[in-house]
Length: 284
Ligand SMILES: Cc1cc2nc3c(=O)[nH]c(=O)nc-3n(C[C@H](O)[C@H](O)[C@H](O)COP(=O)(O)OP(=O)(O)OC[C@H]3O[C@@H](n4cnc5c(N)ncnc54)[C@H](O)[C@@H]3O)c2cc1C
Image (cartoon, rainbow, N blue to C red):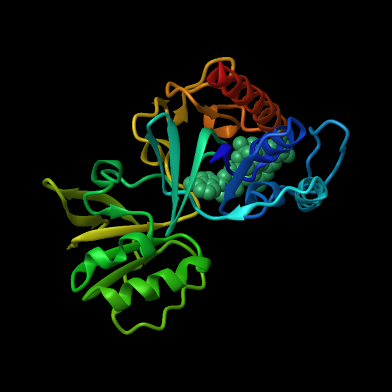
């Protein structure tokens, strides 16, 4: 079991793992990409101390070079759920699972807002993981919302299992070969149903579905961790970056504004220190 699991590869996550490494902790680092896209996207960064007028792509390279130079490896996975069991945490990522005594959420803010009703039907029709839950929809009708080309192989996998698959691609260059997948060029607006999900609504129509797969590089905080206190879409933390769940910490954009690299990096560092203090308390 790991001391700590860190989720996210923006400045908050990078800073958290550098700190954990320096403090000699045994950790796992999970993120959907080697460095957060939001770092590489900046044209020119003028507010990061010591690195005046650095481009976003150079800053991303600097981050990656730094952590690799410290011998830190990143496990490229989207975490779909964090569950507490007997005083430790299990993190589910596709067909893999990881166990840790503490978790630091450095998950940024979502660029794709959750669909209305999404959180209500998690585990009752809404899934974030094709390989974990695909078999549950054998011969059924499903929807798949996809935000990135790199998840297209998961759509093809789902289309083979389901009887009918409606795909909602929210990116350019969509290309699916399966004849069993029908493309709907609309943005899903609402998921509705009774005890289970029954339909997806969009502008100008609705479709009956048994399940909805949401394939994106991030999951909303409250869908990721059941019972996590969230306010206005941000994870509630105290001054030590502790969430309402003992052992879970959060840092960076996900805890609130301002959305800035240096704020995220600072919080990642502080959250790692808090996690280490918490681990020391556990030993007493
Ligand atoms: C175009 C642009 C320009 C910007 N310019 C500046 C600037 O000049 N100066 C400045 O200070 N700030 C700037 N920002 C803001 C800055 O990008 C953010 O404040 C910063 O990246 C936040 O860092 P973070 O670590 O909190 O989160 P993020 O950088 O958002 O990183 C979050 C990471 O977590 C991963 N993740 C999320 N959920 C999961 C999951 N369930 N499983 C696995 N991985 C997950 C994401 O994929 C991502 O890698 C800019 C932003 C943009 C978009």
